[in-house]
Amino acid sequence: MWYIPGVNVNNPYLLLTPGPLSTSATVREAMMKDWCTWDDSYNQGVVQPIRHQLVRLATAQPGYTSVLMQGSGTAGVESVLGSAIPAEGKLLVLSNGAYGRRMGDIARCLGLSLATVDVADTEPLSAELLTRALAADPAISHVAFVHCETTTGILNPLAELCQAAKTAGKTLIVDAMSSFGGVPMDVGDLAIDFLISSANKCIQGVPGFCFIIAREASMEQCEGRARSVSLDLFDQWQCMEQQGGKWRFTSPTHVVRAFAQALTELEQEGGVAARHRRYADNQSTLVDGMARLGFEPLVARDWQSPIITVFAAPTSPDYDFKRFYTGLKEQGYVIYPGKVSAVDCFRIGTIGEVYQADVAGLLAAIENVIYW
Image (cartoon, rainbow, N blue to C red; front, side, top):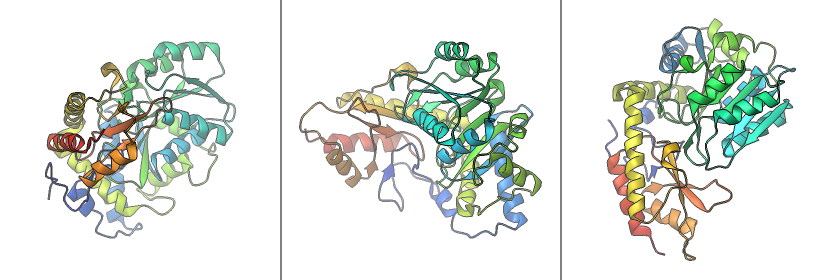
């Protein structure tokens, strides 16, 4: 049974968040069967096709591979940072939000040599900024940044940043957690070495594992570098390569099967381009409707992603986010609190099984719940 816009079947509310997000009934139903992790029907029939599909979604260029990793998207980021950077290497992290700053926190915890460049949460990263940072520190070997910074929904200029990093000869790590599968990109054309995303974002699966799409040559260089046993990217990759999709440790079988179904539904929708159009239409309708209700987004339209939008909180002294949130949840809609430390705000996601009827329903609910 397909999801019916405007009808939240078997769920008390619609998740208007950037992940976990509302999933289709068929994705949820895919988790209703147990799988043995030793059987070819699972490893060869489910895991390996997922790995190949992810690479095909990423690029048509040869020389790329993928690996699945237990845990949240942050575990995938930590796996790459902890496995890709040699002892003599140095990482540059560019950030304009909480998730970029988290990459810096991970690097410090791992004891990596680190340089950081931070800009305001409501401003995009720039290739000029990256080029200056690289010129000032020749020791930098690896560059990392977030493509879609879900702190604000800003979409950083991926092509320009990738070009600047590769022109300088650096290994490139991109957190595409909330953009891969929902924003068109070609990992090969962009010359990305490691791209990280998660099952519960634009592919529209459920939480439980992340994945890394990487240049094979870059992945091979990770051997022996890992600073963690469970997050050893090279060993996980080799296990899946040599044992036909086998995971080193317990595989999240139900989540993996749901993800396989989500990939099928992405293809049925028309692929990434079609999904991007739906998300963009959702976001445009949301912003227009919110403007009529007196809400303004914090991010300029030129930099706004279709993934999530941050709105300034009302200035009325009677406004309280928790009361606002609870009122919407009682009507069947869940939104996100803000993450911009300097501004009182809230966030609304427009990805997942969300359609125009859902956005219209949300706008009506917001109008109903306004009490200030």
